[in-house]
Length: 206
Image (cartoon, rainbow, N blue to C red; front, side, top):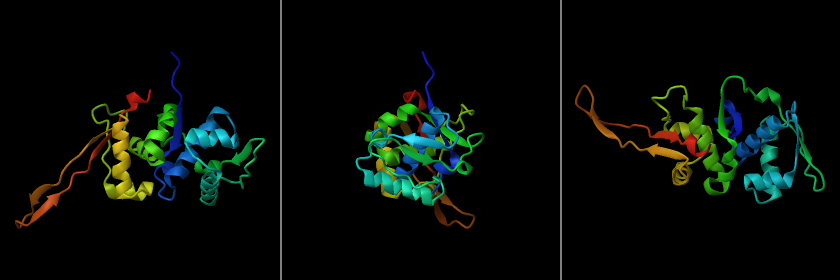
């Protein structure tokens, strides 16, 4: 049985609050293409296939995302969409550091995009980026909602909705923790809020 391929994304990209979920997925796919073509920094992209893999329906959405990535410094060139040939995309390699802090998920994640949406993909990478797979006793993370919002550009409503999609797809196990009452030194009542635990079900992607 062949070993599964993985998509590697630097943690600074995973947690960049300037990126929308579509921007993240577009750049994540570009990084994967860069890896499998063993290219130095330039990728030749079949736009039609690229959109199909990422479940993007029209050129305008993709063009807008690529332009935002260029303005944020992830892409170096003005990408021209060619109908009869591939389009060249030049990646800013100064943004890429795969030697140390990066997150990886199996390429089967592409098959789930239609079900979990671009925000679902972003959240799955995000949670995985905070899990230490070397610690077998704690294969989960527990970022606060405030941190998730700041680092993924998602609203509370979107986080709740796409967490549900991930759980339904059996790609995420979420353990909710309700607030518990506490009393301080002078007897004042306060509520101790426990962050939810997020367990990425990596075994279901392999």
